[in-house]
Length: 505
Image (cartoon, rainbow, N blue to C red; front, side, top):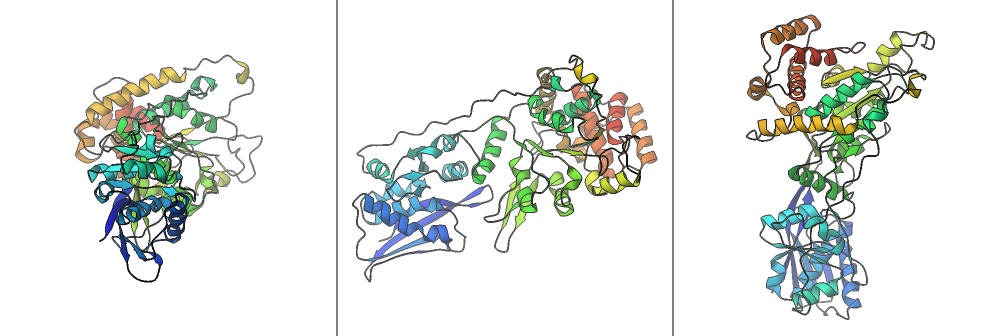
């Protein structure tokens, strides 16, 4: 008779249910695992054998066959150890078969029977809830998985504790959800001296999730501004926190066993590979653009990134998702991020300084920023020059607004958008509005419409650029507590679109 246990295999953020079948049959002693396992899954038989031996459970002198169904689905990861052990224990009639079949299990076994934390507990809990089953996982994964309230989560320390639970000797209490406490922001916008226009662009970007490009000489404060952006962003909503944490769980970077409401802030180095940025590599893991889902992706020295890496950003920016294509599968990850890019005006960095600029002006700047293709440049809603700050101004007292004041305005604008798009599936902020919805919420008044038409004709705005100006104008109106988009809102949006020194396509 075949004993069954259940676990999951991961395809992107989706966890697919896998049936672990175990059969004992007469024949020469053998322990085999079939069903397209990878090396880590194949080695599970040795870990299971040692863990059972540590509890004085000897394997019978029979042929043990474990099948992972569906057999054509690739199985990867050490989390198959625990469900294989459960199916074997059920086949040996040590634990009840019906109890095992009502559970989705995942966890790695050590040789002494302890359960070791694995990645993907949160997506696994979602799959267990959809299948109307409970989830059994290592103790360290319990607080993370327990956030899915629809599934009962049992978190154990060892295989011995699991056996005592199923035999009724010592039931395991359901795990409680954990949350990472909010970390206070140590950086404040008030620390930035001057750069009022750049700070205004940051506020608009945060309010409507508009992509921003900053161009300025070295030391002008671009990185300083970007580092303070998280301090003005609102915390993640419950839905956003769950979405983001599922990706972080699959990547193995969800810390402290809980879900954080802080928005992700990723800042990859410009030498990062395409797989690191977009996703891929061994196991097709999520890249930086997916780890920044619902948060910020800051790319400093933007033109220094490889051209191929920059061009791969074009589609994810538009669609909010990325597909990692492999020969045997296409894995999809969400990636709705706020892109903040920073660049020097030229290779040497001092194009605007007549005392330090090189002899190749203006070709130096044109060639350097020319590394950013026209289609990619067209996807930046906001473009702002960040001029250098004089050293004498650094000694002056701070007169700028604090992050708390700006964050309050951003939160109010986000609140307006939440109500506006409550009945629009898949749309949460102004940057995501398009088509008839965009026309309904962002059509400016007659004066603003005439201004935008003149600008479009004069500077040759693309259709994408035209609509992005409307989205930014809508966000500026929200910050201004205005129900209608008026001419001043359009004018400010246009001013950020046609920043001096940056080309339009």
